[in-house]
Length: 225
Length: 225
DNA sequence: CAAGCCAGTAACTAAACAGTTACTTTGTGG
DNA sequence: CCACAAAGTAACTGTTTAGTTACTGGCTTG
Image 1 (spheres, rainbow over the protein chains, first blue to last red):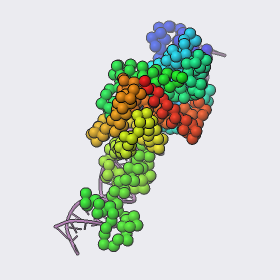
Image 2 (cartoon, chains in turn yellow, red, purple, orange; image 1 turned 180 degrees about the vertical axis):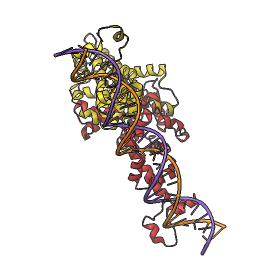
Image 3 (cartoon, protein in one colour; image 1 turned 90 degrees about the vertical axis):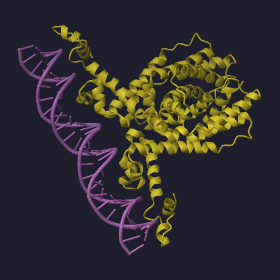
C-alpha cells in the first residue's frame, strides 16, 4: 500500500520527471485500461469487444492488460463491478428525510432516470450481462454483497405515505422499484429501434424532459390510494 | 414462384423419395438456416454468434448459408426482419371492437406482455440491435414500411375512453405504448441480473402472474382521469 | 433424353483473435 | 550503488473465424 502510494505520486531524487506524468504509474495504467475496457465492452458487448482495441484505446501494451487483470473475462468482470459500484455509491448520497412521501418517491424516480441518462455505458453493460444470463454477476462475491440502497429508502417512503393515508396498503417495494427502473431503462436502451420505427427522435431534449415527467406521473399514479 | 412450389412439395416421377423428406428442398433448407440463426444470434448477439455454429445447428453445410443469405450480416438482417414480421402479424389478429375502453387497454397490455414472455428471442434480438444503434434496422426498407398495428388500436381506445370521460384528455398514445412495452421488456430482459441482486427468482410462475397484473394496473392508472 | 442450372459437400485460405514468450527499462530498499 | 522486483515493450504462436474454391449429384425443361 505505502509502496504503491510512494510510486504513484513519484517522490524521487530529482522531482521534475515524476511531476510531468512520470513514465511509470501502475495506478494510472490500471485506471486507463479499465476506462478503455468499459467503453469497448459497452459499445460491442462481451462477444464483440476486442482485447487489442482496448489496449489501443488505453494507450498501453496488450501485455499490461493481462498483467493487471488476468484475461478478457476477468477484465470484463472488473468493468461490471466498477459500474455497479458507481450507481450504488451515487444512491448513498441521496437524502430524503426532509421530504414528503410523494416528493421523495418523485425524487427517487428522477434520480434513477437521470443516472441512466448520464451513464449509457451502465445500461449497455446490463444488457450484455443479461444476454449471458448474469454469468459474471453471479460469480462476483463483491457484487452479491453490494445491496441497493434504493430499496430501503423506498420502503421507508412507502411506510410514511401509507401512514398518512396517501398510498395503498399492498404496494410491493420491489414492484415499485422495477416500475421506475423499467420506464427509464427501456426508453433509453431501446431508443434506437424505437426512434427508427416511430420516426421520432427520442433523444431530443423535449422528448427526454417529457418522458421524465411521465415516469414521475406513472410511478406516483401506480401507488396512490 | 410456380417453380419453387413444384420443387418444395416434391411432385416427381416416383413419389416415394419426395415424401420422406426428399434429398433436396430449398425452402426447408432456407427455413432451417433461419431458425438456427435466430437461436444463435439471440443467444450470443451479433458479435458472439458463430457462422459455423449456425450451420451445425441447422444441419447444413456452411456453403449453403452463403448461398441463400450472402453473408453473416445479411443473414442477421433476415432474422431481424422475420422477428418483427412475427410480432406485427400477431398484432393484426387482435380484435377489440367489442370491448369497453378499459378492457381493451388491459387486453393490449396483456398481449404485449405475453408475446414478450413467449418470444424471448425477439427481446434478445432487440437488445442486440440497440447495442448497435439500430444499424441494420435502419437499413431495412421492409421494416421501415411495416408499421405497428398497436398504435392505431391504442389511439382508437383512448378516443373512446376520452369520450366516455374515463381517460385524461392529454394522453400521448406513444407514451402509453412505451409504458406497456417498458414494463414487460425490462422485467424479462433483465430478469437474470435482477433475480441475482434481489435474491428472488423473477421467472417463477407466481411472480410472472403478479407482474402481469401489475402491468395492467399501472397502465390503466397512468391514463385514468 | 440431354443440357444446363440449382442444391449440396468437403477441404481450404487469409485474416483476426486471445493469450504468451523473451526481453528491456525504471525505481527503490538494503 | 547494486540487486531485485515491478512496469513495460515487441514480436510471436496456435486457434478460431468468416468467407471461398473446386467439385459432385439431382431435378426440370426444351
